[in-house]
Image (cartoon, rainbow, N blue to C red; front, side, top):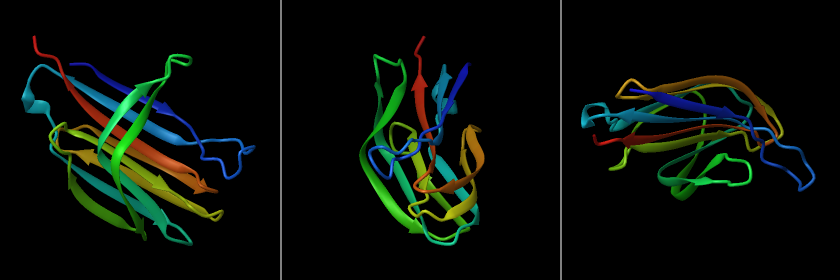
Length: 149
C-alpha cells in the first residue's frame, strides 16, 4: 500500500495585487480492499484567536489538474461554513466516496495561533500548527482511491 501526501502554501489575496500564501496538505490512500476505507473524520482545532475563525468542510468535491503547473486543486461542489471559537471538536461522516475537505480560515487581519488535527478512522491523519493572519488558511483534504486488482 502506498500513501501519497502533498503539502503546499497559498494565501487568499485581500487585494488583487496582494501576494499569497496558504498552508495545505492533501492525502490519497491506495488500498487493495475496502477494509482501509475511512467513514468518519474527527476534527480538532485548538489554540488562541482574538476573533472567531471560519471552518469550511465538504465531502462533495473533486480535484482539477492545472496542466500548466501539474498541480491539483480541490474544487468544492457543496460545502458547509461555520464560525467557530477555539477549542473546537467535531466528528463528521465522510460520505459514500470517503473523501473530506477541511479548511480553517482566519478572516481578519488579527493573528491566530492554531493547531488543526484531522484523524480518519482508518489511521490516516493530519496534524499541523500555524500562525494565521490576514485571510491565511490551513487546508487538508483526503480522497480515498481503491485499485481493484
